[in-house]
Length: 202
Image (cartoon, rainbow, N blue to C red; front, side, top):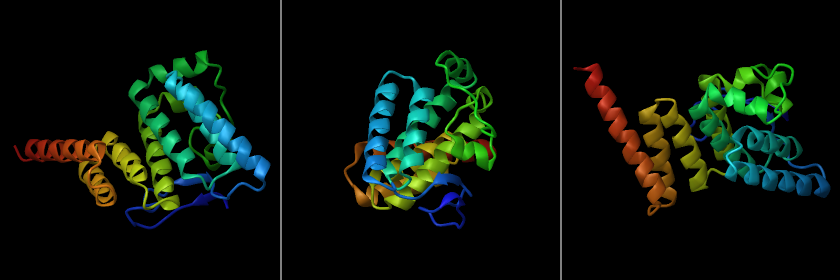
């Protein structure tokens, strides 16, 4: 189950061809508990705006338990925040002592390694692709979770895929019709998509 290549075009599926480092559930109760501890560590780092460190913690949690959608959801949020900071995120990661891992720039070894390199942290496009990959995996694990739809919509919007982002937000609203965050995200995606369309046809 490790380093599985997702494929297919379903809205909740791995249409991005996302490389997921681990999709297997925790092998033992101890691994599951350790993964939750790492998630808590990641949450603390995220609140402290140490997004590189948080992504590292969530990645280690995923290595122990690849069946928890929350780990992928949280790491997707980290990638988006780091993409906003690129290329300054590379310096932040170095200052935090985040070390490079072999192949982390994009190959299979990097996807499963759990390390973050300055090259990754400076590559906004790659960070956003990772955000979307994690969001896609989150939806695969919990297709009826509105937050999974939100993560997918947020990643698509950050990539400039406005129509796709609106679709993801709409799917989330079907699950949670009164979700104000999803409503706001869908409106933003529709507005930006309309704006882009007008520019193209001006």
